[in-house]
Amino acid sequence: MEILYKVHNNLYVNLTNKCPYACTFCLRQTMDRIGESDRLWLEREPSVEEVKKEFEKWDMKQFGEVVFCGFGEPTERFDDLKEVAAFVKEKYGMKTRINTNGVGSLINERDIAPEMKGLIDTVSISLNNPVKEEYLSLVRSKFGDQSFEVMLDFAKECVKYVPNVVMTTVDTTISKEEEAQCQKICDEIGATYRIRPWEE
Image 1 (cartoon, rainbow, N blue to C red):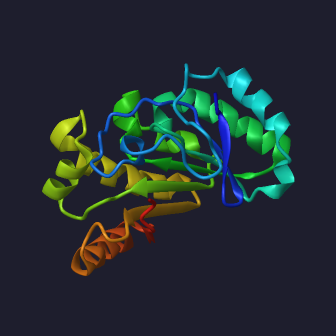
Image 2: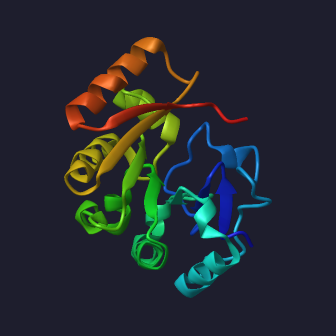
């Protein structure tokens, strides 16, 4: 069971396979691995202690940051994520990032952004598309119509508590005009816009 795995020069934490989205472009539909992993489908969710113990197997000096992102939405286990992030900060003094769909406050039924202060250095939120209807047809959220606004509100809140807030779209999935609209959204929020490469 792969709990930690390497992508480029970062170490990724695979906490859960749960996700409230069923994105049309999700890598999980066509593969079971990312980066230098073998299989990211979990037999069961690892305990916080199991996750902490996994770090002992790695030379942490070789990594730039610890990223909470696996085959699921990491905020599905937000309280456990915070505990692991605090451990990473305390033991290794490393930068931390969450890659998220941005509806963690819906999942946890509370505003989770303030709880990231001092624990998370970067939040990367999947913006996907600047148009609500297009976004919803892409992500197929179990939370329905409210998901787009909740994601944008989450980004606005994160800017108050997290040093780096990034919003992303995937290269080749939207037009240059839509990318310009995304840039405008990010400028208004105070987030950095990043176009991610399409991963085969």
